[in-house]
Length: 231
Picture: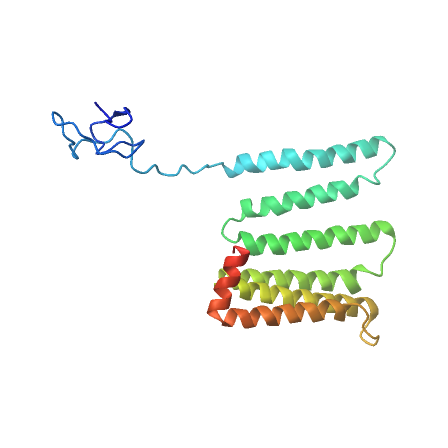
């Protein structure tokens, strides 16, 4: 062992200079030998946290499904099943969102989107049946939800399959938001009625999408925008 001539820190024989102040090792009786192994590794490999799927599914079921069962039990003991269906349904939807990627790891993104969308559609259909109104799910909610799911899949495909740049994905998302607003109003009021609110959402979405598309075609502007927005 040697000591730093500048700050006095004890140095290992493998160190050519002080790790604290950077002063060169000066010991004429024991010069630096680079063949001596260092007392610590140069690079420490990352330790991946591995949790078994079985344990994750069990923990997820306890955290989500058991509270849902508790709501149903309390409601039943109070005189019948009424309000507990709604929180239980939300907890079941949350379980599906997390459970699908664990059960289907190879196709987790699209499977999660499609299965979650189907579960949400079933939950909304249940609300329609329980409320006694049967004139809003099939004509309005179902086609709007199906269009929304398709739009999400398109954005995911742009990122995963076509490796689209961030600005182009934002452009596609803005166009989809405008189209979705237009579709929702058409489903609500019908195709023969003058549009009221959707043009006010459609116009700025298309304007921003066009602006970002023009910026994405200019490499200098695109890089400057990314630097300013930190993405």
